Every structure is written in C-alpha cells, then in structure tokens.
Figure 1 (tube, helix red, strand yellow):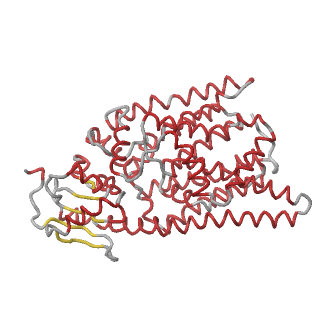
Figure 2 (cartoon, helix red, strand yellow):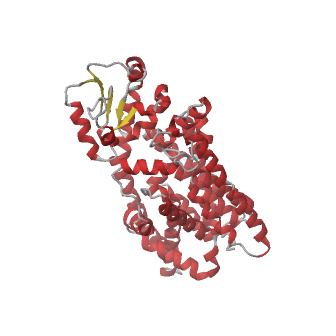
Figure 3 (tube, helix red, strand yellow):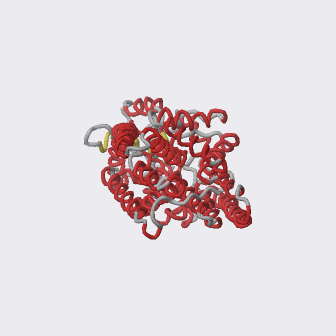
Length: 485
C-alpha cells in the first residue's frame, strides 16, 4: 500500500482541511444563490415521490414504463426531507467534506502543494458546482469513493468497505470498487477482506429496495429502456464506453488543453513506484469504469458526463501533479522561475474550466432557471383550476415535479403525458392541459407535435412566462376529467 509521508506539518496542526471545507461550502452556497431553482433537480424530486409513495402505500410506479431510476440510499436519506432546499443543505455539507477529502487524499499521495492546488482547482469545475447544488447521485458516489480511498490509505479497511457500500447503495456500478480491498496483502489482508464483505451487503439491499420501490428487483432495466426511447441520445455500445470517458470526456470536452499533464502525472507517479498499480487511488476510479462496462453489457444505457465525475476529479489531481512536477524539472533551482512557470501552466487550467463555466451558465443553468421558475408558478393554477383526473402534457424533465406536487398524479402517473413519448400516445384524447417549455424537450423532434396541437385551436393560454418562452394552456372545451368518464 502506497502511503507516503505527508510533506506538510503534522496532521494535528494542519488547518487546510478546515479551510477547504469552509471554501467549498461557501462556493456551493454562492452557486445556489445565483441559480436558486437549480436545486429542483428532477432526480431529487423523484426521491421525494418514491418516499411519499412508500409511506402512503402507493404502488403506481410498479407498472409505469418510465420513471427516474431509484437510488436507494438517497431515497431513504433525502426522500423524507420532502424539500429541495433541505436536501441542498445536506448536499452543501457534503460538498464541504468533499473539498477537505480531496485535500487529504492529495496530501497523502502527492504532498501538500499538489493537495492544495487540487482542492482549489475543483472550485473551477462547473460539474462540481452543479452536482453539489443539485444533490446529485453522482456527487454522492464520488464523495463516498474518495472517503473509501482515504480510509484505505490510512488502513481503516472496514470504514473503506462501508464507504463502498454507501456508494453502491446510490449506484450499484460502484460495487466493483471493492477490488482495492482485495488487492491488499500482508497482515492487513484479513481486515481488508472483511471490509470487502461489508461492501457486498449493498447488493441484496439494493435489490430489496428496488422490489419495494418499483415492484421488481430488476425493474430498473425497463426505466433505462424507457428513457432511451424518449431521448435523442444513443445507447452506449460496450466497446465505445472507455473511449467516450477517457478521450471524449476527459480530453476533448473537459481538459482540452491540460490533459497531457494528466498523462504525464500518471506516468511519473506510477513510474516512481510500481506498487502504486494496486493503490486505491488508481484502482477505485478504474473499477468504477469497469462497473459501467458491465452495466453496458447487461443493460445498455445513455452515458452522461456526470456519471464519471469521480474520474474527472481523479484525473484533475494528476493534471495538477503533472504541472507541479513539470515545473520542478524545468526550474529545479530557482523558486521564482518555478513559481512563474507554474502560474503560467495553471492559467491554462483556469482558462479552460472558466470557458466551460461560462458556456454552461449561458446554455444550461440560465435556461433551466427560467424554465423552473415558470413551472413553479403553475402550481397555483393547477391547484385552483385543474380538476382531479385531468391530464397534463409536459416535457419529460417536469414529470417528477408534477408527481411530487399533485397528489392524484402520484396515484395515476399515466395522467402525465410526456411530450417525448407522443408517438406512443397517438389516438388518445387530447390532454386537458399542456405545459409548453420548448427548451426543456429532450429531443427537438418532440416540439413539432406539441406546437401543432397548440395551433389546432383546441387550447387557450392560461399563463405565460415574462419573456414569452414558456406557457401553460388548457383545452377550451375543458372536458370532464378522465376519472369521471
């Protein structure tokens, strides 16, 4: 087990973890204040729906062809809160812990300089801001996996196994990460294998949770298939998954300029000690990729960048290490020259990440903020003007929100008609209401049928957003609710 002595002062006098915890907490709070509606993530709202159904005995999701895949740990952790703001508080605290964890892992493996820069660089990463603000499952998986790595580096193998179990209870693809515990040799091997045994408990617990929440231990497969049918994304072929993550995501999308430093850092780090090939910092991210490869074989899915957030953070640490090592070799004697070179190279990392931030804010964060603000404004209209049993046509993105806020729709999810599934609903009676938010469609092909429906003369506008980009329509004849027919 590679466990180099930190180059900093003794851990009891190291206040950097507390400083980074405070900075990451402040960063998360700032981002959520800039985009307050971002906390209404569809996946998070789905956890609230699952929990409400569970405590009220509603089993309607057992038969629905699509809903957000349940994440057992988050359903039982965040579901009872029934508040996006309360869930954000939990996530913000977790973000503070994660900022400290990245520093602690980096200090132990690379020294204090790399640790400080790695945790600081994380603040530039737009995925870090969005995933923490939205209490994303992928953020919690990354948090638990880094906790497992740190616990293993400090030889707390039972804690490491427990962290893997928690990650797998969010996403079962994290279960192969126990490989780092199986790689431990010597006198610690028995305890490490005990930690692996703890991690494996997540599998039966996940299957049990699936059975309770969606009526089948393996019912998530129909949700994957249902989403793929409504999305314009392509299911990831098994052979393309590694290329997508290691090349398209890391090199061509996120670290467009600095990726070579990550490769250099990884090669230098392993080259100095071949025993690092079994280090948990190397094995855990690769094992997670292996879990996704296995998933792609058994259940083809559409890959998103956020699924591999732990790989992004892992590679960013090697980029920083590569930059620092490059500077040390280019200017081994002059500290001033070394600092100047490091600042120059760090600028490229700053520039590419800020470019991604600006692009994300203009193309995704701001449009979602406006759309969610409008959708929330329809609550009062539905509460006063909509009769129980009336149907609503909506983009898929707001399906969990409607089930969360309207009780009879949780009882009868079929009352929500998704615009992306209009082909499957042809021949049905036109919906009573239409929630028209064009920028929220998963695929633009779904927009034309909705607009044709609205231009047919059957509908009258009830509410519109201030900029006119979204509107709520109701049928002019306002037919009797389906439940009364």
